[in-house]
Image (cartoon, rainbow, N blue to C red; front, side):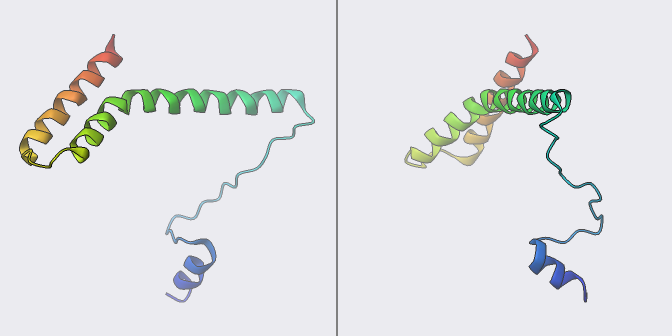
Length: 94
């Protein structure tokens, strides 16, 4: 415990599995490394945008439910969310 609190104060978290990998900026003077870094970031952004698109129906449903009078039974809401989940799943399979 003598290292837990100081580590939390210093880093904001504590883990038993210390991360040995540090994030480092690429060498932008090397065109190959810069291009690879750009491509990795671009691909990561595309994946994130796809996740956002897939979650939009759920978010719309949640917003609609939160703005409603809250007279909908929780079980009904769960059933509707599952239907939305199935629609999203099916749209990704085609």
